[in-house]
Image (cartoon, rainbow, N blue to C red; front, top):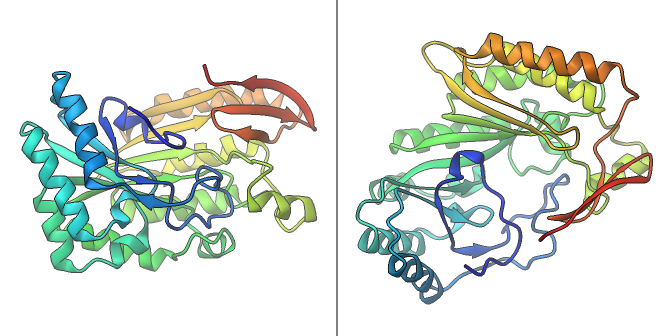
Length: 312
């Protein structure tokens, strides 16, 4: 497959067939995100999409789950998206569901009938960037929606028979606000009931707009220890017996990862976090900071290179 840009999807989609239907992100204004800033957004033609479907089909592929890329595939107009879903059903009749990223606005821009139609054609789960439980943080980061709009979007897709999964970021609220954000975020997630929660802990990049705020002091980043403590608070509060949640958390900068089912695995997850927090508290404070374009990233501490990740 020829894929333009950077492949980014939730770990729950690791075994899914990733079918590109757009390039880039149509919004592309979030201050913390650098995934798509070097790309000009465009939708791919049905000819390109069908050719990729046929390539997999002719290799004997029969995927049970398909993930549509890139950023916010759900933002495609309903007619084009429905045509793609029909092609998927035509070539892969055993496919059990189609998942993709969505923004709150892309959901709210579709009518009730549109959402029901897409659900009936196989859309099962939408990954939505919730990021924070605090409205002022969402506004500062130019997320493009507030929490009340997110609640309404989630209500609408669930009414149409779809699930949602939440992307969040510990550290997004900045230094000193981790506990506040964790409590507010847990309240929102427990209320709205995501199928999965994926924590992409704040990864500060020198080429995103947020970095200018760090340099001029209008945003003070949380260090990695504070991010871990925020995550611990979140896991302490997240998930109920009536509404369990699968959680995956990434801290690539300090090479720490945690996963489990809440509340079933809560004690085990908290113990793992406590151990890591104890180790991190004995080290100098570090802040996630990288330069370069993924997957060719250079990690730095205090301006000095630590490692360089390069594509093969």
